[in-house]
Picture 1 (cartoon, helix red, strand yellow):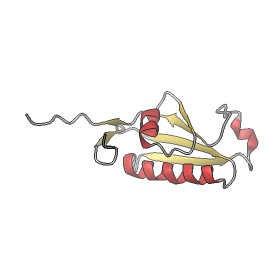
Picture 2 (cartoon, one colour; picture 1 turned 90 degrees about the vertical axis):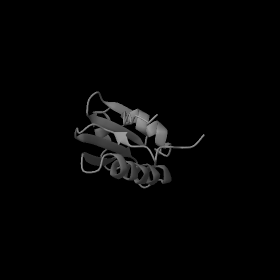
Picture 3 (tube, one colour; picture 1 turned 135 degrees about the vertical axis):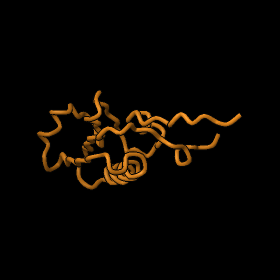
Length: 110
């Protein structure tokens, strides 16, 4: 089965997206999660997103607001409803489903 994530058009609507990535310092998982997230945002949400990176080593009290229990954790604040994805965000399909970024329904000619 072919991975079509790169060749399929995606619809994230025309809404503004507010994303928060909770990390703990510059661990390999945190660095990977941030790099993956930036890549996906530029590919699927270009010009329509705001990304806030929160380092819990510097601001541990900020974990309580979004009920962060594991890191790295991505929180989609907007569009509602709030969604969370835990991990390094390396599985493109899982991230797109988790953020609710859906393929555009393109009718194929018969």
